[in-house]
Length: 107
Image (cartoon, rainbow, N blue to C red; front, side, top):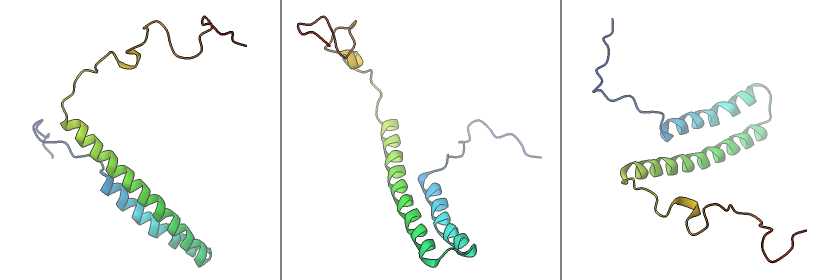
């Protein structure tokens, strides 16, 4: 019988980019093997492996970048936005786009 975990114990971390990349690398090997098993040509399986490796590499770069940004934003102090957001410097009641009340006619 397992005892309940105390609330002071840290929760397990979510999947990191490393875990995702390991599974993707496994797939880069497994998919061509399965394609060869079902009769695809060696060139077709090799092309598939290269394509999957390229996609995995790009995803790895993006995931690492995302993790770094998340850590950086968690460490930085949070401050209120200055100037009221997007509408600073404009009239509050008017949105963007075309306005027909100007000096030029609109077709």
